[in-house]
Length: 355
Image (tube, rainbow, N blue to C red; front, side):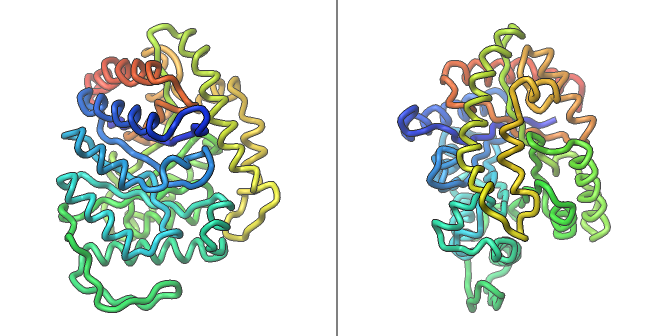
């Protein structure tokens, strides 16, 4: 079993400055490296409190690379819709060199209407931009000279320098709702990132199975344990009740910030994003009691958190978890004690189980 830290900023500037957020996140990352975590991961979003402090994951990960020795450095995820693929390929190859070959790249389509409006990118083009970019970027990393004439991008004889430090940079894709997205990820040989927070569990498990079948049918071999990653909110204290009580305000803050951005879907519709018009209502109905009852987070004592991870791992067949452990504009000392306690109790427990 592998565990990493996932950073998804959700602070308003009046609550926590960017300087404070990055300092705390980098300090937590350094602690995670010493405690045997597998990776650190950060998102890409813009403008709003929901992810807005992370407009360029490569900058944060470059800083993290200089504070750590072992952690894999993951984008979770970059949004190709808003960056030319040649620029993105160069940026990530540079990060791979700076980190000594520790980069893993997660890609996502983007889904927030305000971001498409800001960049002047039609939502109707999102899927084409996303898929075309992924194909081009993988070619740019593996071929010396690339000529591409696609529906969105065209260029001739382009080389990326520096060349990737790794022989092959691992690529991941985030799949959320549609079976077709999971199948496409498998057919194209990408690793898979999933989020259970708002998902129907039975549907998500079925979609993960579709991914595995598509991956193997396309001739990529058998899906390995570390090729599927699940994002999960986690907060751990020695005392069960303390964790539950302190976790409530943090979880509610995260949901409220998510809702601030998601309400745009109340008045937005797109054939490219079927079902996304329900996101805001799903968030409005996702109470803290419901989150705990439906086991959508890992909040509690070490024993409870270990059991929760076991249950999710067995149900979904997932063996890598990316943990949001400073969510909800969390106090730094709370995040630090949670990261340390998880590292000292939960990670060793799974090592002993050899899973």
